[in-house]
Image (tube, rainbow over all chains, first blue to last red; front, side, top):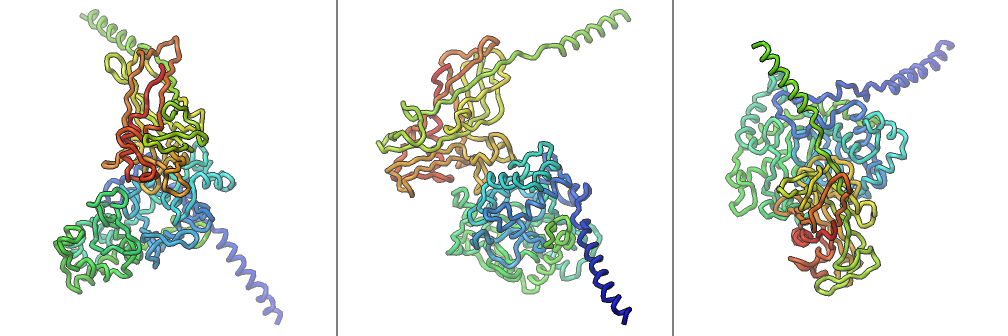
Length: 350
Length: 245
């Protein structure tokens, strides 16, 4: 009887000690100098973003991460960058066809994944943003996303003791200004590199692919690689995918930005890395499955349609071909990247 | 023979020494004072009523613009370039006077500058100083600086609140609104140790709506993207003149 009583006390105590140990173990979120080294993955080209002008440091990266996951960047402190860009979805948003903003507002486009951004020479579906560092200003100031001003963010951050200290350690001039906010965010997002999928391992000779996956790779190279160019799986161009205009959204793509009808309904060729996780698909998220995307691209497009010449020429695939290409596309899922602790939300929602 | 060699080595050494001791060319500074006007009236925000070339009256509540990449041409046609941008803002008295340093002594016959921000500085990422996006002169919907903002009210305007809103920017063809300005000095401008040279440059806001493309406020009261931006840019390309130097 007595010994049982002891267990009654000892057991919860043990649990508490274990829990305390877990909570105080911050190594999961600790960023070391090695964690922020930028290396060009084998087979990747030279990036567009020049890290020489913004050398990542642990302090800069941690500041960028905190900003990325902090709803303080939105007008009513309700949503953060990470709200739409979910780590487990390759920093796209699973399930929402269109982005969600503050006050329950719905955007006009599908949340794009964030990966290998250092190799991007333009951003957003219509390429309206020309540099990684200024990209965050678009969602921050958009009335249907975060609806905030950079001036007000600076004010809010200056009032916050944690941030004041973090800017001090992260930047020589210690100032909370737009430049340092954007540089810190670029350190964090610029290091989101996906280069360790089964495809990558296969290319490095570290893994094998199944017969179906290999056949899919060959078919992919014969039919898709012209736009979704390896190893980034995009050629960074804008193309008309032959989709009919959504009559609610009336989104004419690049043409809406430059007024040039040659660019009517042209959208950025998105990367296909982690495509298994970034559903739904296309600029407006109209397809839920990769099969639907395959079916779309193998349709007949008339010469009068605005579709890309490659589509007008036509892509012919059997049902089995499509299945093999999809099997191959799933080898682009990069578990190392999707579970990389460096990119986890430091407030613990990982 | 040896003597000759020693002699020539010494000569070369002396020459090198002399070259490295050449004093840098002497430089002075030039102060440029921007004077914003509307036609022959001084620009006063909000309170004064002006008229466009079609006789439509309007007030101005905001007038600001980027100028940069100043260059001075001397008599021989040689150009001196001074990098950097300035935001001239009617609301901020201090912004109306800018100083260019390190201008070599000499006589200059003309001055040039960019109205706007050139393509390199439009695509260089996060910037500070005059180009800090916090200045409210940066477009996030389509990366690039707004080169000129004019806002006001006109009874002829069909916009909400009878507003006029002209935000002009864009650095890519065919919607490139950067304009290169070249102005001749009235008299040759001397930069020397004696005087701190001052130039007064007038910016006539009425030119936005007159000139090559007269603007009818009942048809066009707002330009906030590439639509019609070039018309205004062509108009503002001749809004500057030297009034005193």
